[in-house]
Length: 97
Image (cartoon, rainbow, N blue to C red; front, side, top):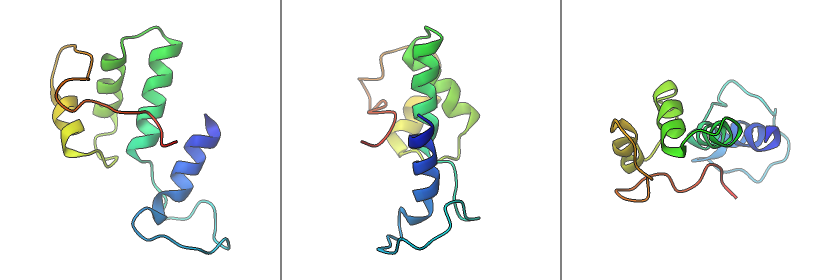
């Protein structure tokens, strides 16, 4: 889990500006938390604390609203209440493969 989070944050500055170089600082000022990191933590929270996935995902979304979510996920995350997320463009995964 720590590797997935670190890799996501380290790679965040290259998401829209890919590089072939392997010579770069791991944690640069341009690195940031992303939606993949937040949702990975939300799924872990649900699993470790026996919480409903939708509740955990929405809680984490609301704590980190500027992490770069897609428009459909934002709409889903803003809805109060419960649901499985499979309808209406809910979450697809917690981390990139």
